[in-house]
Image (cartoon, rainbow, N blue to C red; front, side, top):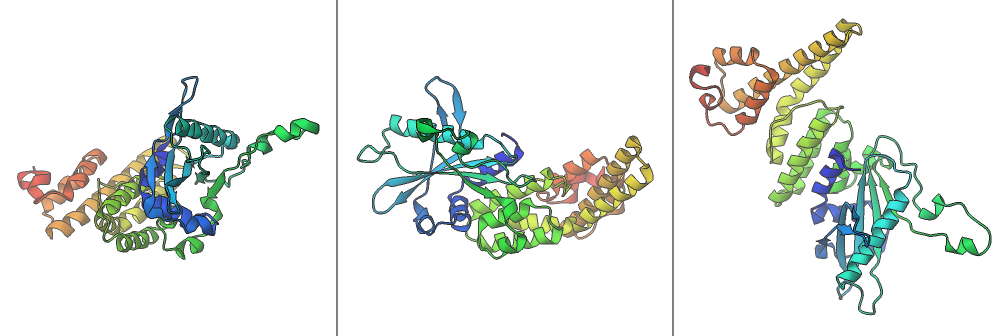
Length: 334
């Protein structure tokens, strides 16, 4: 299912380090964990079947096994809702992948097909309930026909199956992703940012990737309800969230007051939420300005207090790059 979550995960798992940590941390097989994941290569994941209908896998990687280029193909499908017929989808995807390998001449030396590990990575709110074997979707029958009931399983990795303490015990990028996906406190997110900042100190590319994904995740999830300017660095993200802790708490408080006073009136409730969000944005902007420029003149504070949410968002986007208050608000705040 194409949605923001799937797109975000495709973005993250375009990095081989994430695929490596997914296998090492969450696939219960010692042989797979022992492979050399420095040989990971991303391969095309979109195929056209023989009747010319396009079908797309989410992401496909291959890894070298042994001293020869004998590939184990890792087919990963991202899912944020339970799909009763996922086993059928994965069987189709594996078949299309094999067809494409044959077409490209990438079979084994003796003509056999390389092994494929089909993985479904699920982070929906409910536990996964669909069967993981295509054969379980077909009722058993007596006699000869039973021998021809298809068999193909996929490996399910359900984020809900792991406790936060289990994930916290792993020095693993994917475990950090799972923890950030869950509705946690602002301080817990700050701690996770600190871990990622430490783990990726020599990987500016992954630092940027995680900063972009975390910002999108915090803004997408209703549990967080927080707005952030464009940030592409983990340290800036950590600083921004530290400045937003008070805003975050304030937003929840303002929303609760608005709901209590509205007494079920939709219009009043919406207005109260908007006012609380604007107050939080204004507070966060003033804190950032003081952090950047030490003092904020009274005329700038007055301008911020009277601004719309849209204008506040624009200023928040500008504050990290601006060299002076004038660049944001104009001369004398005009």
